[in-house]
Image (cartoon, helix red, strand yellow):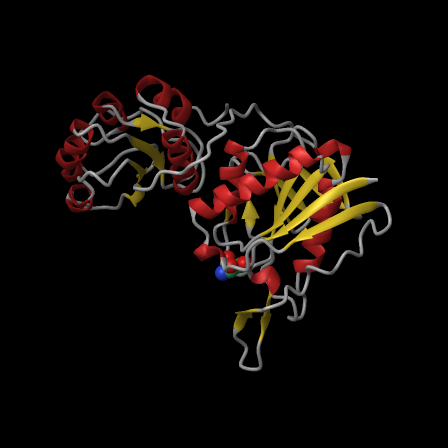
Length: 324
Ligand code: ASP
């Protein structure tokens, strides 16, 4: 019989709506005792590790989660399910994807409707996640996100809607699998993952979004010893307004790594345009163009790389390549 560890961290999946219609956390997690699926066929262990709305999740908490899962792997569990608020679920999922060995299925899930709302999706998603984590087809797929009958890789999945249950999407490639009748079916393979077994996390890694008419002020404000790295969500294929360039150059002169992704929902940042602030100039200046990750994922990748003490060419190689 397989042993699956369910780690609960909080989020809407463990919340309820009160008489005023407000969604609030519970002292007791309403889904922690529920296991209708595969009852008697798997051994489900429950760990109520945190009870946090996901805007309260930090990289330090992600690291605690990673260490808890490492302990479970050593103890011999066959799969892990993590329930999590959906707001930052993609960041925790990608952090774990970058830091855990790809040896057992690790599946994150959440809910868009709280536990006592009509059409609540929490228990349904939780049950799907349990069946995915216990399926032999789920091995070697990296960290997975299971929501609304779809299975996504942690690397590219993103929350796209504030309230709709069909919120999680993988813009460029689509989900790698689906769940039907609580059974996982896969249609795409995971491309290789490079893992960093970190045991600490650095702070001072920031994310800035470019916009029309942006000046260098926000960049200059980050020009201090507390800043260890910056990700810019650039315009289009990876461009920024020219008024930002002097401040960006100052940061590079102070050896602060700067990663460039696109603020577009789909596509990759590339060196296409050769004008002031265009991707070609940015690459020449020394920015690291990271292909295919969104801003929040690129920030997690930079943070993990810096926490692993990667520097110079090694940092550039690791962060720029979203496909290994
Ligand atoms: N705000 C909630 C959270 O992330 C949303 C959710 O869980 O769906 O905790």
